[in-house]
Length: 202
Picture 1 (cartoon, rainbow, N blue to C red):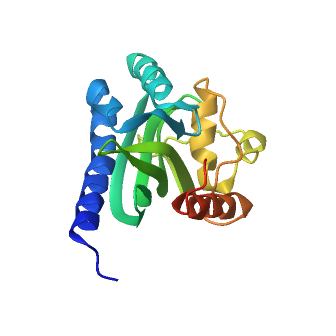
Picture 2: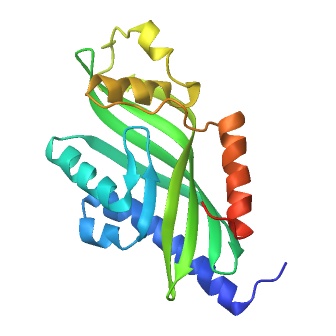
């Protein structure tokens, strides 16, 4: 279906916003990062859930402690419905930390699933819900092998099992029912997105 000039511009602005999220968050550019959220916008991450402002404050504190989380973006799909949109962005989350005495990188592949709204001429995030599709853990130094607690590892969903293990070991309480590639959690998220585009409240 052919987009109108206004829809093309909305699509462009949303894509720019999503790209700015990753750059500004990972660079610690907190005031510009704040501008991608609406005041009631919420972030749902494995290690923290709250408003955009709360996410900024806990990210600042983690940054000061040396917590190393980076994001890399891929393709973006935007579904527009007037002043509302759902965007999906392919992404990887990379986190480095010591796990059982061994410096490790965890790489988690998935999508950001964003509920967006245009208010007073400005697009902003109302809810960001990552979808965690698969992950892996690699020692930074080849040959070093962390001895993982298998019972703890297997408590977490397969899509972010190693990420959750690392985050638990460095002191965070990890949410255990995040959506993955398949299953009731992601199906419920898709239904919620469809309802959002039809005008339902979150």
